[in-house]
Length: 165
Figure 1: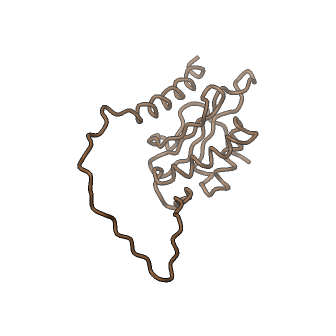
Figure 2 (figure 1 turned 180 degrees about the horizontal axis):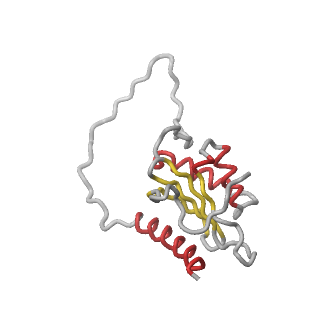
Figure 3 (figure 1 turned 30 degrees about the horizontal axis):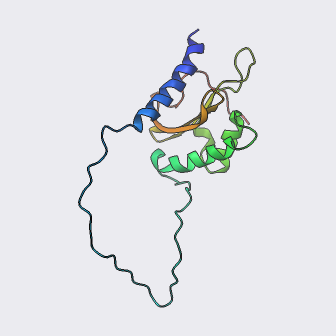
């Protein structure tokens, strides 16, 4: 019985933490506006081209927070494909992106009575923090977060499956 309550409770906890993280008490008060005219200088050999923000990339040796944008991008890529609720697809994509397979955990894709899981979780441990993703029909869009690692060395509470491929 506790195993059945564990996953929904973990899912609810992740969703609640992420939802509360976006809440703020007040809007910032408007401050004085700087009326200084910006100066622009260009060297004779440079051309004016619009700059595009760099795409997220793996930060080798970086923190979980530094790697969250890239982790989220990889998760979104898998979610937009045919294997939305296949744990192996997320693990394989994260490995292909450069994350350490030995630092990963994933929950089963199927329930104990062989029904498709309503949600799956997967993680990558980086130092004492974890990149955690959750996907599935009961979740809606993918959820990703940086959460503290467990004292046991893992990231996920409850039943996980072996990553033996």
